[in-house]
Each structure stands twice: as structure tokens, then as C-alpha cells.
Amino acid sequence: MRLATGVVLAMGCAGLASISLAHEGHSRAIPPWQMASAWPDRVAATVTRDPTTSFAVTWRTDDSVGRPRIQLAKASADARFDLTAKTFNARTERFDLEIMRQGVGENARQAYSPFNQGLGAVHHHSHIFEKLTPDTLYAYRVEGEKGHWSEWYQIRTAPKTGPMTMVYFGDAQNGILSHWSRMIRMAGRTAPDARFMLHAGDLVDKSDRDKDWAEWFTAGGYWHATPMMIPVAGNHEHIGARRADGSNRKRVLTPFWQATFTLPVEKELPQYLHEQVYDSRLTPDVHVFVISSTLEPFEAQAEWLDAKLAASDARWKIVTMHHPYFTPAAFDRRDRDRERREAFSRVIEARDVDLVLTGHIHFYNRNSQVPAGETPSARVAKGEGRIVETMYVISSSGAKVGGEFPRAMVEEQFLDGIPDQGRLSADRVAGNTPMFQVMRFDGGKLAFTAYTGTGEAYDAFTLEDMSNGRNRIVDGEAAYGDTRYFGNTGPYEDHNALP
Image 1: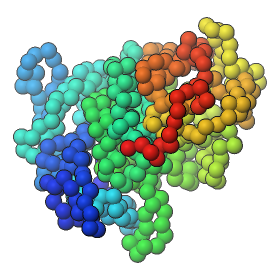
Image 2: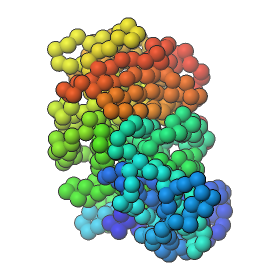
Image 3: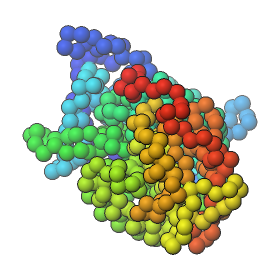
Image 4: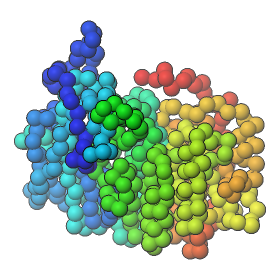
């Protein structure tokens, strides 16, 4: 959360207490779960550089709340565990919702957002808890107006040793409240012990529209406040903005991003990449590196990633970005697609990355990179293992799904057992199927399962660390089920018809 870098809005004149706003001769209803009040809402727990001993919290109120407090206690079975709580003052920043400004000085941009006309100003508050004990259950709550407290949220710091679980989502984006809510809630039921939830970009559709963020927070509710989030900015988290004089329009990170999340800042990178590009050593075994794959040039990020990977001694190295640069050249649409591949592929292959987690294309696609000089196989007998280098995954958790592609094309390009120019061979694909993925790390083993919205396993594999830049993979039972194409699944209506 770095609103001080220049996020400002000019507000409309309608009152915050109203649930309908007049605009150009008509009124539009504002759902009660969107409007800010003196009570805290949109509580988000996010990672720091070391989640074994710290975590960050961000929340929202209306602009009547000045500097609220946040409390932390070690959770216990005692009825009044809260009597041991410590109280901290939060950092508060003002955020308006109509004219958005991003950046400072010569880099300052602004964009008018008609979606938010009349919503007025809100306040975002944040705090980072530090010097905590690893693998310990804590309880925290946040305040709005004095005495207006949230419920207590329980959150466990990451462990120094032993197993750890993480959930990964692709794009939520469309039909967020109506459809995506079942995905994140099923994920919570499937992996209640998850310490982290990774969102690989396009969390919302229009990131300058407050209602989209209201839907995202309402759909996730408790699961945004605990466990810790690892948010990744996608192309839909960027908006067009111009200089104050109306010239030189370009894409910038939505001001909602830094208002909503408190994330590590890489000071050696340009300011426009702050809180988009960061790393978090989740545990001594697991290190995650987050990239912003929307804004070129990519060279500065590639250099940063190369240096960070080279310095990491983690057993499992995971790179996450929104765009799957590794897809076949047939999916390239712009020069930036090729530039992205050239910038990141050489670094990831040279630095022994184990997993690359992405979204963007709105179908499920799990790929294995075949070691140089070895013959790939897209299917082996159940229970047999094979050696791979990096695993690449594309996933989408929202109700928007990729266009219907011919079955023959899928089998020819993805399931033929022949690697592409990046030595990638697809192991499992699916269309018309929103999913979430659960990863369980336990020393030198990683168990990966992709689940549908009904909680059924669609794909599964286990990786065993070979400690030489390669892993041994064994596909699970779910990986051998029928492939879901549009032709053999239920009907689908375009996502633009979603609520």
C-alpha cells in the first residue's frame, strides 16, 4: 500500500450514506456490500518477504475514519484469548474514486473513471506485523471508527520446517460474485490448512471500477483475510491514463492495486513496478517470485529475476506472472508476446525454476519441459515416473472460458507427445472448466492437484526434487481421466451475459 506515490481522486458530491446515486438524469442502485462505512471492510492479509515471522493487513473505511487501530494476539482455546492482545496504530491514506492519478512528477498520469461517479472518498488503512513466531496461530482484528471492530481473524505464520499448503487461482475476472464465489469457497473447504492463496492476475475485469473490487472481496470474504494472499497484477489490473494536459496516453497499474494490497517494494526497480514485482520466501523450502508481465520493456524485470533466482537456495523456486509466455507461437498476437518470451525464458531455464504459474488464456493447460536431448512422452503408464525440468501451468478460476477450439487441434498441438520449440509437452488440458489448484510441499516432494468447482480432482501429479535442476514426476490418477472439451461438456453462453 503506497498511495503516497500519487494516487488521488476528485470526488462527486453524492453522500456516502446513500444507496443510490443520481447520474445524468437516472439513478443506479449501489449494493450495500459495496459502500464504505465507519465499519471496516475489504480486509486483505498479504505476504511479506518472510511470512514465517510477519504478514501485512490492509482494510477500508469511509473517509470519516482517521487513524484506526489493529490488534494482534496469539490464538488459544481460552474464551478471552484477546485479553493478551497488543494494539497498534494503522497507517491511513485517502483514496478518491473518480479521477484517478498514478505516479508523481513527470511520470504522473490521470484517468477519469465514470464507473465511480458520486462514490466519494474512502480511506485505506494498513499495518505490517513483524517479529512473530514461525508456525504459530495468531488472531487479529481491525478497527474502523473508534470501537467499530471487525471479527477476529485467525492466521498461522509459515513454518520453518515441515509441510506447507498453498492454493493457486487463475483469472476470476467475470461473474465474480455470482460464479467465482463458489470457486474460492470450495478451495477453502478443500484445503482448509492452506497458508497462502496465490491469485495469478485478472482478479477483476475493470480495475478502475469499484464495484468489481467490491464483488471480489464479497465473493472471497474470510478467505482474503486469512490465509496470506500472493496477488499478481494482470493486464486487467492496468488502465489507460494520460498526463494532466491530456497528452501521451499509456497503460499504468490501477491505483486500486496499491490501495488494496500491502506488498514488498523492490526499491532497485522503477517506481511503476513497485508492489507488482516482488519475491517472498514463504518457507526455507519454497521461494516465490512475482513478475508483472503486462508492461514492457521487460529487461529490468528479467535482470532482477535472474539475480534473485541466482541468490536463492530454496528447494522449490516458483515464478508467477499473468501471461503464459511459453505458449506456442500461434498464440502470439503482439510484439510484446515475443518480447516477454525472449526476456523470461532464458532466465527461467538457466536458473532451475521448478514451477511457472500463470493465467490469462482462460483454459487449463499443464505442461512439462523435457530435458534437452531426451524424448518426451505425453502419457506414460500409471505409476511410472519421468524426468522433467520446469513445469508450466495455465489456469482460470472464473466463469469466462477460452473460445471453443477444435478437438483435432488440441490433440495435434498439445497431446501429441512432441515438444515445441521450448521443449514443452502438454500433459493435461481442459476447456469450459474453471479450476483451482492445491499444492502441498513437504521437503523434497510437491503434490499438485487441480480441482473443479464441484471439488472433483481433474489433474494431479507429484514432483520429487532430484537436486540437480531436474525433478521426477509421477502423474496421479486424476491425470488419466477423460479430457474436457467444449464438445463433451455442458453448454456455455458468452461471459458477457454473466451478471
